[in-house]
Image (cartoon, rainbow, N blue to C red; front, side):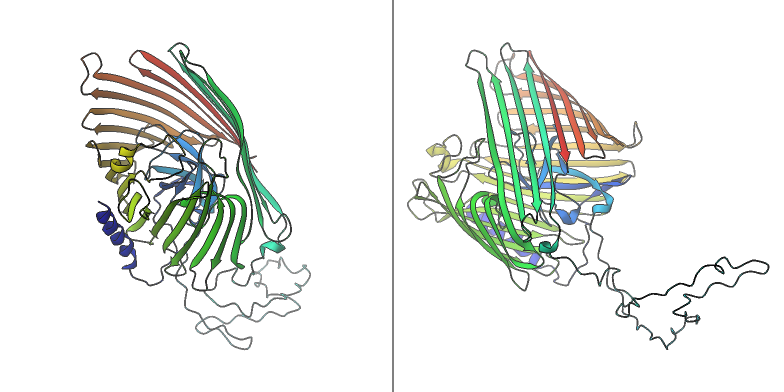
Length: 603
């Protein structure tokens, strides 16, 4: 299996490099967007799941995203899950999940609604330069106009018969001091405007504060759950007059889990997710340094670090860097001090547009000073203006012979490969995912048993297609096949999306799905109605699910589940946003009620 994965990854990495190497104009044609008044919806997907549960998505500032943007993910399970952009790059972004226990697989689709004016404008082909006539020359093939007197200003239009000159009584124009002699036709309007070095800019502060509350009530006596969060994420730009950025991200949370016939579980804690200072990392500096607790920038898949990271940009655009420090444990405490890590990476850039880049990184860890993991992360990302896009990430564990359950030199612990293309009225995506447990001294969660290390794996191949059949109708479908150490199966999802079906500006979705395995089959349907307005947006959602389990008696083999949810979002011009939902669940003889509220203030 690993040799097949290596071959597949090599093909994926080679595919983009076989594309034409000519420079291409910058555009955002990869993201399928739909315009609604003065906003656009940016389609995106999860490309990596980071160690602390945050997600790396395949869109960034180039596609219109900004820090603090709200991302809505739409997993196959049907329930929409939201997150917030907390780390931004040109081609990708890190999204913090608003639900602390949310788990989304690679490839999960999502969307962000952003202002139209935020998008990067497409860079047009440069126009041929036209010779600029001197003061004593006339423009060829053009009418000759009288030259303005520098003291009296431009000549006025002769008044019509019987009319007075409206400018006759105005004082003479003093004339223009800047003749723009260096400007040539075809140059951008601000071509001569120089950018300001970050160290010369005034200090600024931006960020957000939030308060979240989720509550679950159950018909089972004595069972319930409450979870509350409050936090802040603040960026101080140039706080010390040296062009650096100080980033502070912390939160406090409280959970109260009520369990029947058991002791209740409640705890509160304050967690520092980020406290770092970064210098460089802009156009005026080829070198950058980060200190403190931060998400590693060169290879985010290496995770958070309590330490130092340094990066360098070469003249040809390639990037390289290294880091050293302790890895915080990816749990609710985020404690650090047991796992020391040293890493290095190199990123190859195809051309100045950075539409094709390949990264190779290596990380060595020690658990309580005992040698632990040797991890290689290989990535390729190709985003053409028009054509098939390619993305691949592989986590490759290397073994030195001292491992108890691994006899080979290397193994793929995770692989994510995707390719696809969007045309004007239809598009298609293909994805492959692989997962197996690496052998580690570090136990972040429940220990993995020996037979699981030796045998457990999960592979999935899937495809999604969409067609805009009519201006108001979109048809979409997805299918997947999976295989693990015990069973194999597949799933199918089909749907219709209607625009303005019941209300102007609304979207209505109807879906049918089926998931089939060797031991159970689940099928059902969903219906939703959503609409954006000047206050925000709202949604109504209903799902009917039929579970058919093998090996049970007639009373337990067919189980029906229903869900009904209502959600409302408000956004104010002052930067406040409110998002609330109520969801009811009926599962045979048990019922539950879920309610949640998220309040955010951006500044």
